[in-house]
Image 1: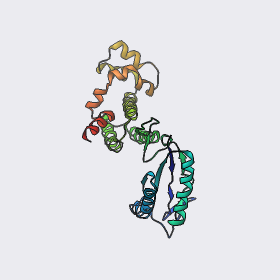
Image 2: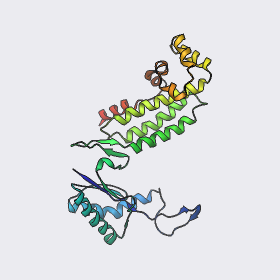
Image 3: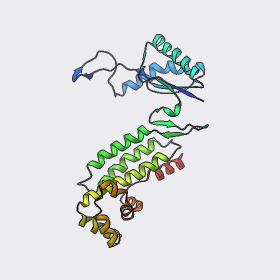
Image 4: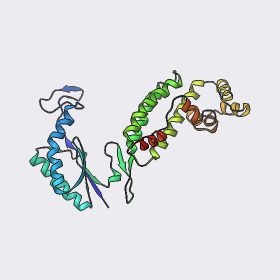
Length: 261
C-alpha cells in the first residue's frame, strides 16, 4: 500500500506580528506576496530535478511537496535523505511540525485528498468543504434583512469559482452534500424572515401548501433550522424554485465542466 511523505519547507517571512507587536525582518519575502511562490519555484527547481533523478513520484506546489513511496520503511528513508538534501545542499529548513508520513487518503494537498481504493480517485477534502461552508455562513448571516435573490447571487458567485477549482474531483459526494446544505440554509433564511407564525402560514399557503398543513407547520414551535429541513419547507421551496431565483447546482455544474474537458 502506498505511503505519502509531505515535506513543507519553512519560509522566512518579511514582517509579521508577534505578541501584538509588529516586527520587521531584514530577510525573506512578504507572506502572501507574488514574489514568494516565484522564488520558491526557482530555488526548489533543484529539488524537483533531484527527485526525478531518484525516480520518485512527487507533487510540489511552491514550498509544499508530497513524495509518494511504496512502504513506511521507504518513507522513513526518503524523509531522512530529502531532509539532508534540503538542509545541506539548498540550505533550507524543513518544517517538522507540518511534515508527516501517512497514507495519501489521510492527507490533504491543495484542498484535495483521495480515496483508499486500489485505484484511488481524487476528491475534495473535508477541510475544503468546511472552509466553503464557513464562507457561505458569512454571506448567509448578512441575508436576514436582504432579498433572497441577492444572497443567492453572492453564494452563486462564490460557488462558481469553488466548483471550477475542484473540477478535477472524481468523487461527487461533496458536491451533493453542499448542494443540500446550501438549499437548507436558504430555506432557513426565509423562515427567519417570515418571523411570525401567522406570516409563515400565509407564505406557505401562497407557495402551494394546503391550509391545515400550513397552519400546523407554522405553529409547530420548532426552530428555524429544523423547519428548513422539514417536508413542508422542501415542498414550498423546492430545488427548482431556488434554481429559478438563480441558485446553481454544484453537482450539475461539475457534470457540465466534466463534459468540457
